[in-house]
Image (cartoon, rainbow, N blue to C red):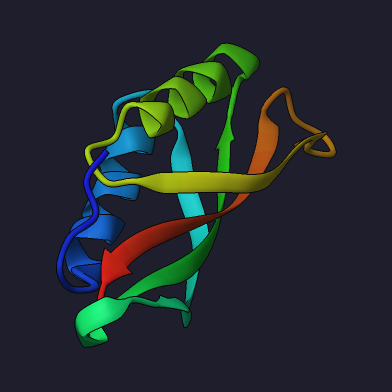
Length: 104
C-alpha cells in the first residue's frame, strides 16, 4: 500500500465505501480521529488517522470485505474487528477499527 503526502480524507472514505459496496455490505457509523505518530528528519512526520466503521451483511460478505481492505492501495492497519449477530435477523454486524497513514 501507499502512504500519501497528505490526509486525503475524501479518498480514504471512498476507498472504505467502495470496499463494502463491492461485497454487497452496507457501511455505517464511519468515524475518523487524526493523530501525529512520528517525527522524521527534515520536518516530515508520519501521521495516522484512526477510523471506525460498521458493516452489515452475511458471513461471506464480511470475509470478502476484509479481503478487499487487505488489498486497498492505501496503507491501512486493522487494530480490532468484531463480528456479532443482529437481533431478529440473519445478517451479521462487522465493526472495524483501524488506522490509515499519511505524510505530514
